[in-house]
Image (cartoon, rainbow, N blue to C red):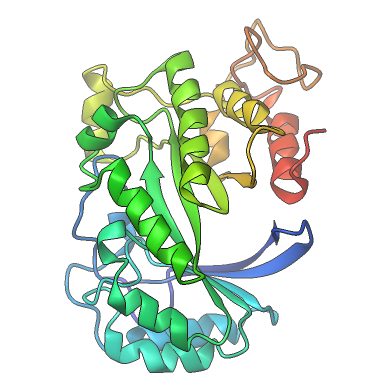
Length: 306
């Protein structure tokens, strides 16, 4: 059983703001009730509990993390699900959460379109700073989106984004690279199309996530030929096609990024000298991987490619 008096994790990271200035962000990974949606590719349930989150647990977790992190005015509260799901984050805890974040200039939370309603708008109205809602768009491919069991359509995403933006709430979108049922160059193209769709709907930034395959269902899909883990070269290609072609910030999720690397040097390896897009070069191996990952870290911080 996960402890409920402290978060699953907390750390400080740097992220460029809309004006390009680097901001310190306190990221807190909350422990709460499992998301009820159970998307096909999701493995975040491992960090949740199977029952309703007790009242008082979430403010206690936030306080625990903030007391141990350097002061910052930007906070991410990621909870492996939906911040405005009342079974995950009790609404009775909202006043205490708002008091803890009274110093906060910007708060970023995760949420599904179906929970972007009155509770979300009321919270944003009482928040001292501005609210940004991160929504898992995943893919703009309508058939694949339906097969991911997201329980939303592209219209749902657009409608939720328009609602939030009309109340001066920013939106960031999570975009999957090579989800189940998409492969190779087609997967790269759809990731780029999804980023563009998110910005067309009004998102202010996008985060590209290489689809992970460690969950039981994902392993089953991989055995059946419906899923292949993406490569580092595919990830670089998506970034290269977004440079100067989208109106907002694009980040790359580098969590467990080394899992994309092939354990032995590839015969096609050109170390770190290849310019983007990678094309037919090394897909990403242990030899060229570290400098290429460093290049992506530089992109995240400065939105420019070395």
